[in-house]
Image (tube, rainbow, N blue to C red; front, side, top):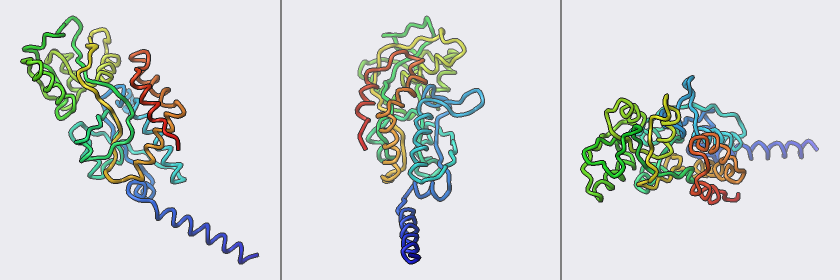
Length: 283
């Protein structure tokens, strides 16, 4: 009987050891350090921003919190979350340099960016639009106006394409972030700010005077948003995708949407509801 019991214990021990050895990449690192580093943008409401106490909050932040729970379930232990602020300019390098494990915010998934990072399933869908101060009607009249946009963003590329195709002679003002652009708009240093429409809505409704801004209804780009992880780390990406699919199957992602986005723009966008159905992949 003792031999049988000893054999069982040895099997359990070595099975656990093998399981631990099978962890690779980011999962192995998280298991070893006991922490996961999440990069986030500090000024992109309602996707990711800081509350009055300087704590990261927002739609994408809540998604990442649920993802951490999935990782903890996989590893069978609690994991410490370390929030690391990043910018539009250094966010992808922060992943490749191992400063963060996952990028949480408002990042458009593109094929060219796929050379730098791997992307998860889509987490949101939006498009670029313009914000102006109320009463500054620039719709169809951009000539000679100063239009702010985050440098290096997909919105910058689409804005240049739009003005080239429509032969608009406007001055494009490159910004370090959309948040800085919002500040410049308030101070009337630019005539309009171009960014993801949902981010513009977030700026307007978290600002001091929401009624002071106008957001044009038409979109001039399609922006599929996703989280970013290190390239060729399929095990970690799978865990993240499993968490996203689980949120879609359980409709938890709808609760997160209503909490952060729905209160800004009212009813859910049909494109977002379609995205949720497509992401509800069975295990």
